[in-house]
Amino acid sequence: MKRPIWFVVPFGVGLIVLSTAILGSFKSDRCLKMAAGLQGGDSYFFAEKIKNLVEKYSEGDKKVCITLIKDPTPQGTEENLEKLEKNEAQLATAQADILVMRDFPNIQLGNQKTVRVDSLVLLEQAEVVSLLFPDMYQLVVRDDSSNIKSVSDLENKRIALPPKKGGQIKSFAFLMQHYGLITKEKNLVTMIEVGEKDTDLKKALCDDKTVDAVFFVRAIGNQNIRELLKDRECKARLVSIDQAAAIKIQNPYLEEVEIPEGAYQGGKNPIPNDGPDNVPDYQKQKVKTLSVQRLLLARKDVSPKEIQALTQILYEHQQELVKEFPLAANISPPNKFKGVGLPIHEGAQAYYDREKPSWLEENSGTIQVLQGILGLAIPVISGILLWLKQREQARKNKADDYIREVTALMDASECVHGVAEYLRAYNSNNTKQLKKFSEVIIEKTAKILIEKKSAEIDRSQNLISSDSLKSFSKTLRKVVNAIEKIPEQATEELLHTISERATELWDGYRQKRLQNRWLPFVSNWQTKSFELISVDNQKTQTATLKSNLDATLRNALAPKDTRQTLSEESQFEQFLETEHLEIRRDLDSIFKRAVNALVEERISQESFQSFRVVWQIATGDADRIPM
Image (cartoon, rainbow, N blue to C red; front, side, top):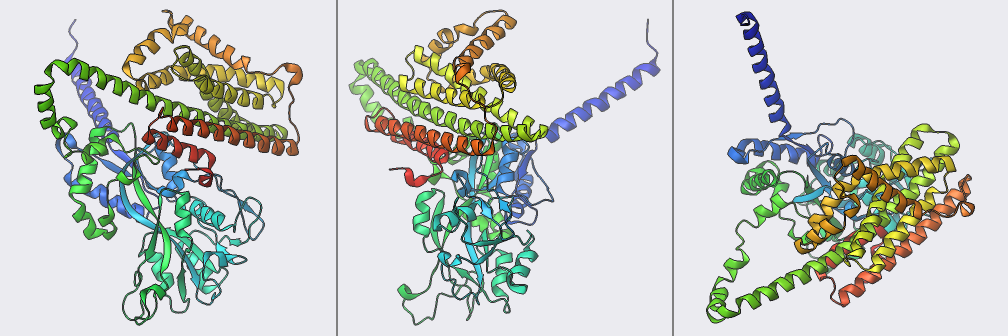
């Protein structure tokens, strides 16, 4: 039966409209969202210029689209990184120094309120695209505070609390911790909460004089700092960070620098002023400080082609950026951070290596000579090269094992903290907090459980040492024993959910592990090491896997008659302190094993440096590193 034309035409029109809408939404989804902090800030202004430049020069198969995330609330590095990790943004700007800062002291306000400064979570998605420009630690005081000549002189002085959101408060806490002015035991400075608007800071320092000092992490020439320093009634000045060279040792992202004379005002009365012209250079009062790079980051799952195209536009049209934003002259490749902290994105690296000759091109002459002389020995040479490659891969895998052990202990630390917070919520019957910290406990323990099961498989194939297996086993026992401090019924519910979550995570983890092993080992690991889940039936496969993981989890339980739940606040604090010390001892033990492996050439220097950075993040104490 033929359908009437009046039915077909509207249907066809509707289909076209729907297709257009779908294609339009697909096109908009291709735009990379960029988190660049608060509107009006240096990073956001720079990001706007980058967005405009990309729109102007992006074309063809290298088309890139960027949209900026606009948020009216104060935003900074921490919020940018959170958006990047949650895939709410694919690009972000970030203050580099806070990436390796850990174990901040709490900040006590003058009104007895406490501001908690949290460490960043370990970043799993962020990779570096480029260095953008340097920010500077800048401490501004009123000139009538004549007795403040160095950071140490801030003792018993009033300081404006940096914005609670962002990287400045972490940099401030790190600086105060170095000088011993704010520690976990004491606060020797008086922190005043003055608001987070630029006008609030000026009013507190210059007009009301309710604070003696203000701390910034901003680029040289920042307009807000310039206004403070040029205010004739306020008479503000910069103070040197005299121990900058020592502080740099604790953080690989910091550099000791000087703020040049006249940076904020030139002429006969420069700001800052090093001293009279007739004074020798060695007697001049240089303003020493620390610089930290502002980074452009991308999620590692963003297409390398898109990031390569973005990087190409950024560098090939850099001069155009400089005209509108002079700090763009500082854009440079992140090569000096190789082996320290975050990796370089594959797309950005492809652009940086665009003119770099391949190994074959560099050694083509030598290869031709060798081919002529040693034609018959090629199979032998190939065998040696293959052996060397296998040996180098084995050394890298060994370093990766140490990194996995440290990461598992970091997860354990968060889990132990989650248990203490869960117990507090349990006592106060706070259902919202119970749910929040249940999720933390489940997620972290599931990851550790997977690492333990994977370590058993690796050990059966002689891919890891018995020491590594013992380390993962001990870490799993640690978190399970912590969970046992929770009332029994809740403990059983958590353990059941942990097994289910570990089962969900297993396939993704397996693929990642297979990719990280060299091919000859991969096939062996893939065919023999996962026999426990190799059955054809999907339901049986999942049930078998869950049963295996559940058995591994429950083997870590202590006998029921030895378990002890916690109910008092004093018990929670003692529990956290004991577990923290034990985790620190375990981290030190792993570090010693890694050092021995380096000395015995079982891991390479480069791999050790990658491990060292992760270990430093985990311990939050660079001074403990003996190298």
